[in-house]
Image (cartoon, rainbow, N blue to C red; front, side, top):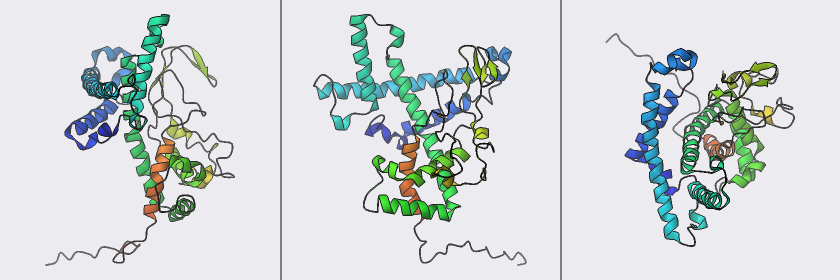
Length: 319
């Protein structure tokens, strides 16, 4: 959906695994907690830990990978004809961004628009990298936590499965159009994100101008870390067993009544702040993925197995 069918399965190849490792390394070197230069600005220019050198190396690797994606999409669009418009079934996000970039270049050439407001080729690559980095590991981690919490709550699995059987059934997969009719599955995802935020401190924010946050003065140049983990465990907002996995709190009449239920994005632009009205665009995708998994968790065990864990017999070491 984002970069096409070919690149969606790239993780199974050697190039895909190398790209995955570069993503892991990028998350590591961009962490605000481990970078001494973020806490002691006077040491930042020394690059004691080598983070800047590693980021420059990673940026070149990303650029080669993204250029390859763009070149192949441009070739497909040119081969499709009809003014470079690909078939609707083959159109993905990269095609849309390339079309917008081309239209803005043509429009700015005739109207003399501000070049800073145009979607450039580097801007297209930045969009793609944000989606790949923010939509792979984060969704997978949230899915794992949701499944782990459901395994500990048989009642929640039963409720989610009943809802899925009633709305979707067993003859087809869950579609995005089903999500408005799956409030409990949506509540499961929201509760998993509350207890286990992908980025407990989000990404470091940088104040572009003097501002006031609540009653705090934030001068320009301030590095701000938003503690989402603490916000999700504030007893004032979550009075009902805040450390317990309880999807019912997000249902009508639950303990989250009056609390904004939108989750802040884990990777917002550096000039924005995670307000309660900001919502994570990955939540519907996670809900759609979690739905069949929740149904699978409710399947009965094979006849040779029991649902109870049997103790391991002691080992006799006397012989």
